[in-house]
Image: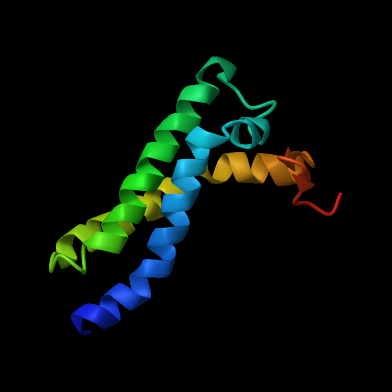
Length: 110
């Protein structure tokens, strides 16, 4: 795959994760809300910020890696984002199973 084709494939996902990572800092409330009832409540805010940092890093890696001619950066970012999604999935499942709102919106059918 050529340089710009790789960037075109990675850029939308990189932009999505970058914006989501920024949102963890700008409006942490919705991210905290979906963790309601989960264990280790005292660590929830730290988890929101840490996941936000890694979403930003991964998103920027996907956006800039191919443009800088560093496919290894984009590949590392992609793997990092994959494992981040695995790590935060329990909070998303918690939101769905307990009919919790993400901000004002409920994502479940319950």
